[in-house]
Amino acid sequence: MPITLSDIRQAAERINPLIHRTPVLTSETLNRKSGAQLFFKCENFQRAGAFKMRGAANAVLSLSDTDRVKGVATHSSGNHGQALAKAAQSVGIPAYIVMPRTAPEVKKRAVAEYGAEIIFCEPTLQAREDTLNQVIDRTGATFVHPYNNEQVITGQATAALELIEDTVDLDVVMAPVGGGGLLSGTALSTHYLLPQAEVIAGEPVGADDAYRSLQAGRIIPSEQPDTIADGLLTSLGDKTFPIIQEYVKEIITVSDEEIVSAMRLIWERMKIIIEPSCAVPLAALLKRSDNFSGKRVGIILTGGNVDLASLPFA
Amino acid sequence: MPITLSDIRQAAERINPLIHRTPVLTSETLNRKSGAQLFFKCENFQRAGAFKMRGAANAVLSLSDTDRVKGVATHSSGNHGQALAKAAQSVGIPAYIVMPRTAPEVKKRAVAEYGAEIIFCEPTLQAREDTLNQVIDRTGATFVHPYNNEQVITGQATAALELIEDTVDLDVVMAPVGGGGLLSGTALSTHYLLPQAEVIAGEPVGADDAYRSLQAGRIIPSEQPDTIADGLLTSLGDKTFPIIQEYVKEIITVSDEEIVSAMRLIWERMKIIIEPSCAVPLAALLKRSDNFSGKRVGIILTGGNVDLASLPFA
Image (cartoon, rainbow over all chains, first blue to last red; front, side, top):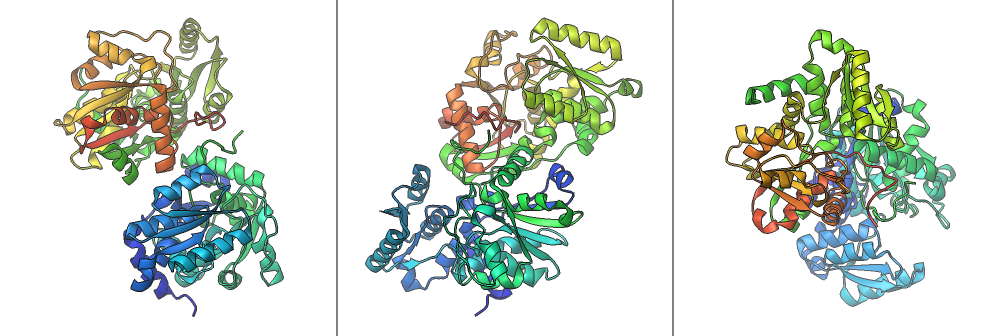
């Protein structure tokens, strides 16, 4: 069943008590530097620090009463894990987060602060999936995949819904692409509400599976992805790929150097904290600025969870 | 002549085309951590990156037509120098900024980008004043002191004016204190518009001249001030001290460790970039949280100009 505009609007209403309506910011300096008119949807100010709260909240609030009491589970040491923990905590149900032993302390702490039970595993894909399955067998919790999940995609779509509601006549809507949850949701909202606008994604060269998948017409997973944009290491799923294939006009790839440079511009000029993954669409726009000249471009800034003790600025 | 509410309102109208009306942000997490209700006036989003733009703009726009064409001059390698350069550029008049040869490259570049003429001097107080006087003799430019200047104080007062307009029933208004331009302006606006509220300042222990001056009842300048809050190294002036003496209830001093800890909280929880100087009032509030429990506290976040290549987070 395709996700409809009505699904997205219902999700927006459902998650409203658990999320912030984040502001749309502009910057004269960045408009001048880019030659375009930029509208930044600041999901770095979202609860738990990233847009992931939208999808996680929608998944949690869409559970049946019997499933709800058993809680939710996922494998993610990143923003999705934190968001799912926070969403579960907000409605008073258990969350089980499978994380590799080797995850950074700061991420372990964040998930624990939101009251989730952390189950550590060896840092391999196999161990992660085995451990998750054991947790689900033991608890009856519902697995909430970080992106290959319709409730999650529908929740992420509400970011673009708000962006479009809070701006006028965007020509382009941009988001980064990792597993494609945000991008497919963004593409759907834009298709329904602003059908004449183009959806364009940015992707790190070092994790360019979405770019290659679109070229090939089938999912080509990343092998050993390597990029500073650590929120975008995952590959497209069978629920996100078809939506992206249908509604995304182009994926522009950018180097880590271009990502850090765009990230630095946003920190220095807008005085807001964003993750490297967040800077990917602006990096893509600046790389191809001729294509965006004079256009009104909405950009989803995805999150602000960085480790202040290890920043990429020299 | 004392600065009146009408002066402040006129300044607000005068500088309106040159400044941003900055947002007032809140944070559930910081409310929880502090036990107070905090309202942050985000001058880190101000043009040129700091509240200094208000005073500089008011000084520039208050010049007579004959003075205006000759331009403005100051000695400042910090936010006031950048703000004066930007204000002068905005109305198309010259700005002459005297800076020590030893100033960081990033600050030289910022002033130069705003089109000011930089005049370098040796890094001594004497050289700075001599050089400034030579520049003024040569150009006829008007000296705009960073804080001991009525137009500047009146301009800075507009930050608290907006904060009070955009909030309801504040019990306390807080600002940091260096030379006292912002604090005296804040105290005046609060006195006129919210007479029942208290004005409380934060000051670094390593530059506690305002604290000691209030105790002594006369200006006691800092000698060799030393603090990470490099916007607060200056000492009170004869125009700022009397206002502070009359309208500021208390100055709370904080250590550099407390400042960095408060700065880190704002970066991590609010995802916005602030300078160390900016974090001083929150550090003061957290140090004395019992005194602020349950109160509605407005805090002016003064600026966001930091060198990303040298941050105090370990």
